Image (cartoon, rainbow, N blue to C red; front, side):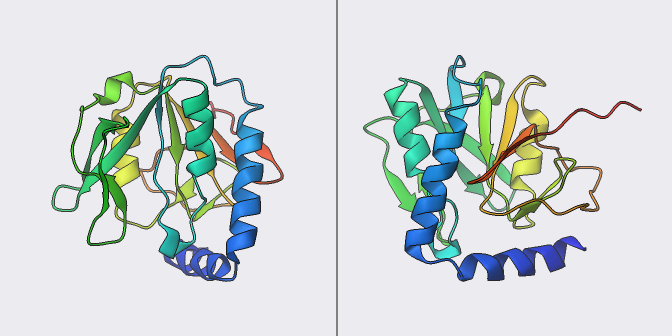
Length: 191
C-alpha cells in the first residue's frame, strides 16, 4: 500500500476511536513500555499529543518519566526548514499549540540531539520491518537521522503492523513498536 493510502486509512481508523478507547489503549501502551529494558537511560524524547488527530495520549508516559526522575525532552517544529529544536521539559516550560494544533514549548533550555537516548516516535502506520508512516512532512526522519546510532527509536501505535511499507532512502527504521497488546522488536537486517 502506498504511504498516502496508509495515511488516509489510519487517519480514518483513528477518527473511529472514542475518547474512552483512546485513554484505555494509551494506558495499555504506557504499561507495556514499563516492561521494556529502557529505563536506565537519562534523556527521553516524547511527543506531545495532538488531541484533534486522536493520537496516543502521552500523558501516561510523561507521568512514568517524571516518576522515574528522567530528563524529558519535547520539540518545537520549524515548518520552513523542517527542523525540530529540542527543549528540556521543566515545571517552567510554557506549552502552546502552533498553527497546526501541535503542542510545543515556547522556549526553554535547548537539548542537543546527541544527548537523547530514547525517542518515542509518533506514527500513523508501521510494518513488520520497522518502517513507519508519519504525517508526511519528514520532521521525524530528519531528526532520527541525526540521533546517535544507539538511541532507541520506539514507535507507539493503537494498531497492528502492515505487512510491508515501501520505504524511501531517507526513512529511519524503528527499533520497537508498542501497541496496547504487543511489543514488537525489529531486528537489524544484514545484507
